[in-house]
Length: 445
Ligand code: 2IT
Image: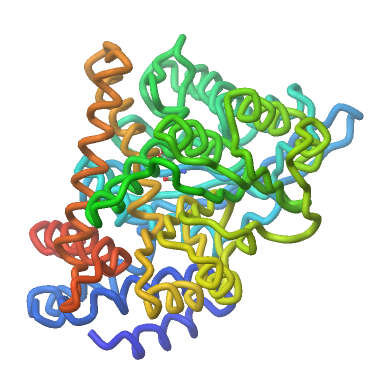
């Protein structure tokens, strides 16, 4: 394979799909050398096949708001690759959603899911509808209208959606209710379900918990521990919540969170009450973190800026793609950062990653660090298939084990001659190899 050639062709075919092209370029560049040692990959044109989704569904979602006005949104499902198992990946409801974003997320999901060791293919979907500022009834009507189209394309052995930005327990409940009515069956067709209808314990916390378990492994591999470490998070949603809970429990001091309005710097660190406040802010529908500083006197709100200018030992972006750029990385390095673990999908720009790797700062990419979320979705599917529920300890132990195996895979494929672990390369190669081998074995389909 010649990455430059593939990318030129892809840019011509999909002009302007910048997030998608960015994600593809990163993976292909990481795997190029290994790929070219495998003539069977080239013979089967694995690279050319893996970069195109198997299929994309796009549909209209008309619904009626509380004032009686008819609204029209667009719904999508990108079924990217099912060589390893049923299509699996979240739904994102946010005004910024477009095909490029969902294709990048679906592409990343293939390799992330491969890393989990569980049998799951890669997919993503969503809508340009944002639940922010909508009433519960509006969200319900939208979710029902969305599922009226989506249900034909999904199924417990075909494609299993879950949450992502803008899709939490409430949305999954409304989506599941409509699926159950239309399909006339109670199956584990969505994950992230409520505990009363097939959900798994630990799923709500799993992305953040898994990320902190991964970070702990990064530290342990250098003889270091989380105790006393200053951690900076961005975001204040479900993922930041889980990460804050677990990092705090393991003795780290979480000093920042952020929202679209700016960031909070709380040098004393988050505690149970402050983490609860974060949840309240999330639930309030305003999408702002500023009120945190009014409630907790030691904390300051910095308007319109990102938290990476605060000195920290460990940076964990938990908000959205490309939220940490080259200048932010330079700021973090100047502030003495020791580890960067991306919890958002593609949270760092290519320029930021280059700077971190050049400075030999261990950088964990999202597809490894945040895989605990989808892994626990996989465990929810297992429990649904068995029609029983595991206790919390069992799910958490499996999550631990999965995160350790992902860390080991990154170290195995990503250790460079000077001993530095290039986690991005390791995660990309480990995930890619599994999918590529599976595609070769299953023929050209
Ligand atoms: O990005 C992700 O891995 C998710 N949003 C979770 C997907 C899932 O199927 O649980």
